[in-house]
Amino acid sequence: MATFTFHQPTGSYLKATQLDFNKAGTALSFSRNSGKWIYTNYPEKIGVSSTGLALAEHKYCTNKQTVNSGGEAMVFFSHWNLTGKELKYRVRLKNTTSNDITVTRTAIGFSTGWEPAPTVESYYAAINTPISISGNGFAWLTPEYSIASNQPFNGMVKFVTNGTVEVILYAYHDATKILGTEVVYPYSRPKAFTFR
Image (cartoon, rainbow, N blue to C red; front, side):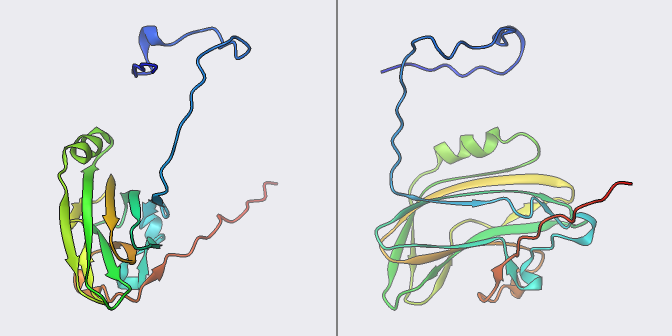
């Protein structure tokens, strides 16, 4: 098995010469489990110029995905609070069956600011936490995170479930506005500019 050392991309670790991809090297192979990857980065800037308001108050969530019974999933979110005031963020689970189920959160990490290392550190330090959800009920997968204005933030969560759940990611200012009927914030392409 090969050993890898990760270095900061600075100083003596940088090379001026290009890599020769024709040279023989160690072939790497990667395997991936069948777990679902739920990635959320749109809108990246929540509230920039009073747009990108993907908030529960406006009947939106930032992502919504289903994880089937017996499944494993990893959630990753990354945004920037430009709403002009403190923002809240949280991941909610909806049991889509009439039976009681258990979701076991196996890892969790979160941080604000420009340095993501605390997210990774806390993610790997987390312990298994079972979360019971009654039939057709809701439960929170994460605590409520508070993000100061003009701060980026990111988080990672990994879990397994013994029943089918809908995973819903929310940005909001007022938790009482979360109804469970929100739709995913629609993607819109920037308008094209014509230069004369």
